[in-house]
Image (tube, rainbow, N blue to C red; front, side, top):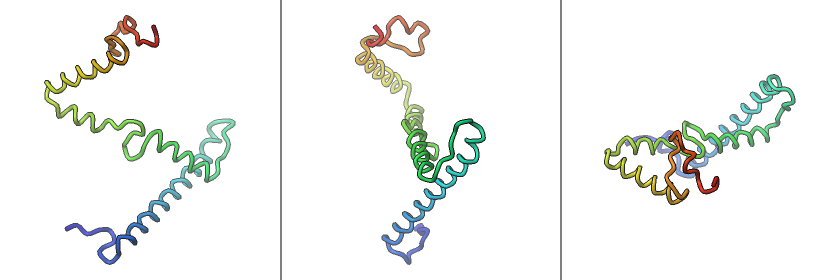
Length: 129
């Protein structure tokens, strides 16, 4: 059996509180780092860029987290699972998935549409007609 970081001496509530405090401390350090880096680099590199305070640094950190994600995961689309699922499919399953995607595109745009086709302008989406 695997031992936890805190051992068996502490209860669940104490472990939860310790992890929450650790996460808050990490967030505080990350916000301070963003503020220091911004105030050091951005005004020197770009004219008209102002220094930011700690509150704005935390906001910038949150914005970056929402847009780009952290730890290798994208913010608005994680494709790792899709790629792995695609690689594990048999050729028949891949063809079936391609046919389903084509049916969805046809239902949404009202015709065959291939974004990789050189003559994609022949069947534009409904909005462009």
